[in-house]
Image (tube, rainbow, N blue to C red; front, side, top):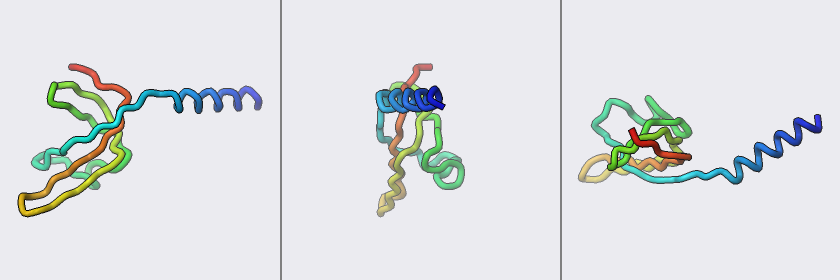
Amino acid sequence: EYLDQLKAKGKEALFLNSYFQSFEGQADTTRQYQYNVDFFMGDFVQVENEYGQRGKSRITEFIYSEDQNGIKFYPTFMSTEMIEE
């Protein structure tokens, strides 16, 4: 039991000292995948930035905006890394 407690405490310390990066983006509304239909808050999705870097990131926030110019989606992602492919 003591060893299990030590392992749990170690995992907690590792999590608290992990490097996380949060970033925002705008979702392409012309694609076939829709928020709350194909993917949801907390899901991991494949993202790509303007430099061609790709990585899996968790959706942590999602802002939906609609005005006379149309519908826009602004997701916030949390990632531990971005990789180049």
